[in-house]
Length: 72
Image (cartoon, rainbow, N blue to C red; front, side, top):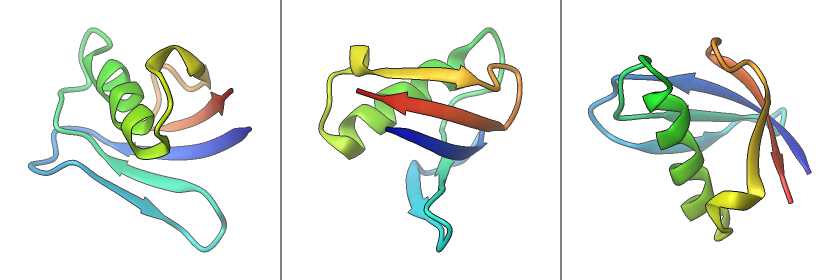
């Protein structure tokens, strides 16, 4: 399954919101430096979907706020 995700780094609280288009908006409590926000995003989505972290991959947008995520 592929999902479009908009990431908001350096947020005070972690939050996952679903838009009416089916995409997700994720507030991440990590800085967008050295891949920390991406790593934290994978952890948050793994918990949200009740999947292991290894089943979640960032396909597009490693250096962007807009990402395409694949979940096995």
